[in-house]
Image (tube, rainbow, N blue to C red; front, side, top):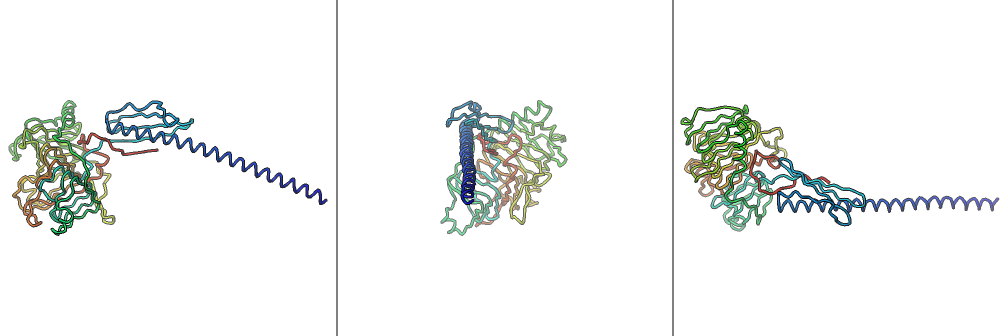
Length: 430
């Protein structure tokens, strides 16, 4: 019996070891297969990413590029890239193929707009940010950032040439600006010289062809937005509305079917409650005498675009607000010298403002200290114009600035708002 038991024991162990060896062999084979499959997926993925970056490079060099790539040999695989244009975006689809495995990367781009700034200034000249000025959102200047007190910047601040005074000078002067979102010098973001609103003009003229009436020439326009989605407008000349034509009221959508209101060689006087989306343009000036927009009273949306979260100590977008306004001027946007603005102290503006050759300023530099300009949106200007005169850091004339960037402008814009001519990535899906 002992011999038989030994034989059976040997046979049993042999079977066990054969099974274990077989399983180890299967594990090894599967590991090799998995490794090979992972390698094939990785190579296909890298080909797709390479194609996406190649396409992005071509688009950043030439925004009209649409050729893509067809069966391009790359890294022993194949690359196919297509470019799809929609009204407001470009979609890149890059597919890498390796050893029968396909991987796709999809990228959505949109035109990079100047509306992504809370405050952008080409040239600050001698104008200063002073105590009481607050900017929530991205800030940039193509010149020196002049400091004349203790302004507060809650978002990232970038400049091309630094600050004036410099760091040592700020300490000596006793100035203490707050850069809570960070500060970086040497950043170059140029603004086009002599920007022309050709796209906006074409949109307004096209709107007239669709039954609208929002294109005007050689006249001033008195424009009031109404909270029920209508606008009231009159034509004439100067700041006395009583001399203008009889008022006409109609819905914003019928008045400006494309959302663009354009005045050629005239000024615009505006106020009211905006319901809907619109861009107002004062363009093609023959000098500083026109091509301006005058804010004669508050100009706000029917609901708040940004709300303050006291717990988080920050402003957050109100996504239920669908109103948007762009204000474009060849020259300046002016806070009108009238009872509404001067005697009411503050003025409230909901809009993204773009001044091609000038900036935002008070109409009359001799007005008394008049409170604060509350802007929810942004301001992009060739120049920093005069909003306040100071003496020893104290305002003697004009307004302080309180700017809250409308974060909705990162992804959505007022109709035909100026863009940089470049694209930026808003979505990357692998």
